Image (cartoon, rainbow, N blue to C red; front, side):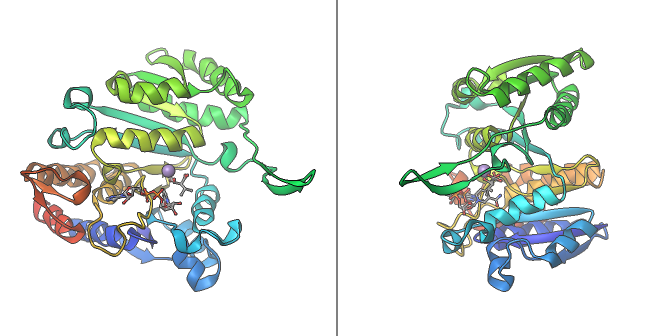
Length: 350
Ligand code: NAD
Ligand code: IPM
Ligand code: MN
């Protein structure tokens, strides 16, 4: 069982070190191999997704990623930027299904910026399509037209792309509370009219799941007004990017939100939903729990080891109950710890 480990940039290496310690402690005979992705890869090879990483990722059973990007690389040509490396590996491995669970641990009810009664008991799953939409649409670019600069991107989905992510979402809802909310902008965008049509067509195959539709602007509002109305949400690449960051704050911090990006066979890339946090990089204060919880998702989805996944998640719950908090979830009366101390606490709880 091979895991390709890509620490990436910014806080990536700091949070990954803790996730790797947790995996090692499980003693499950994984073979871990480290590779370069993002800015780290640009610096070493000029390519954000170098051939050696591609080979490593393809041969591995799962990929564990920290985060990529940072101001250092923001003015490079777009093809050489770290984010292109991330989009490249997602596309290359056909990771079309991005699962982002937003769960509020009871201990963090006061860490959320929303009132505890609005978020307590929150458990929603955002299913984000990850290899299509305006992220990958052609044509795209910035050109000179009629004497001024002109920027353009293309939003598109085929019905088969929508159907395969729809099935993932219906199946997920089936295993949970059987409610699926599909989020689109059908009142303006044709692509998302097709999205709604295909979701509606799929619905009779899942009679046990209640399908509803919501426009994305309303969904953004409802997520902070009454987030517990949702069970599973399914949406396209760009809306899912935005709504999942919004949902993360319901759980207290984006430092708590893990993710799984899966292909049709549950081969996956696992990464926190947050970025490389350049503002706190190198300080040893980042919250490693989203990455550790992403490793738990890896154990569950790719390695079918529910017991090990639950063991890691239980350890995380325990350290929160013990009062350990990184700065992003700190509140008076709890114990403020750094990245490594949080890792130590999880290991002790394991
Ligand atoms: P970000 O998620 O990196 O940071 C947003 C805010 O959240 C910052 O204040 C940061 O300090 C905080 N934060 C994020 N993760 C945290 C953690 N684990 N613990 C404590 N605080 C945390 O988003 P951004 O600032 O918009 O982007 C920074 C860079 O990261 C950009 O280059 C962006 O492209 C990249 N990015 C990468 C990924 C990824 O690799 N999957 C995801 C998002 C952004
Ligand atoms: C995420 C990130 C990426 C995305 C960026 C860094 C390309 O924001 O994983 O949510 O937009 O998908
Ligand atoms: Mn994002």
